[in-house]
Length: 99
Image (tube, rainbow, N blue to C red):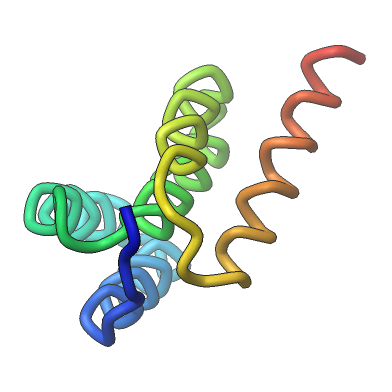
């Protein structure tokens, strides 16, 4: 699958990240869930899954976060910044799990 990063994806991911940053986790999760359903086959959901995983990490749910990160890794890389952050998060959680 080849997909392009569209403005609405970047806006939605940035908006959800902002909501989460300002402790509006429920709203952030709702935006991400809506985007996940809306973009199912047309847009890479890597950013959506990355933010969902970060929220789960913060909620001390590392196993669930890793499952979401695994979904993110299956999506096409359309944003190198998100991909880099995703790979860093996965590597960190694998390190913590082994040590």
